[in-house]
Length: 124
Image 1 (cartoon, helix red, strand yellow):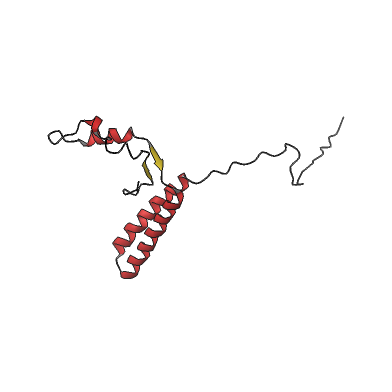
Image 2 (cartoon, one colour):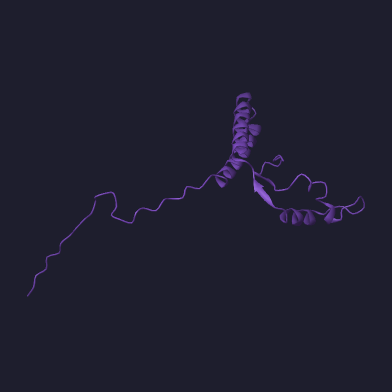
């Protein structure tokens, strides 16, 4: 599947599910789908993030188009492409692999910046 809405995620559907996807909604030529029914149905689908490499390609493509439009003097189109690229770049952080910090051996820290203060008090 392709991310045609440029949201960074696509439905997690199998190819054989696609033809019968809207059958449960009861949509016919006489009974049209209402917006509320459509959004409720979409929220019940399983979604997955687009592949990281494909998202990066799309971001680079939009930034290149933005620069091209800026060079041609089309400022509105340039801003629109830059906005799309920045929005997708936010999706890149969602699918970025997490770095789990490794736990140390629990011993002394590797740095030697300990501060030891002795307090001398008068005894009377």
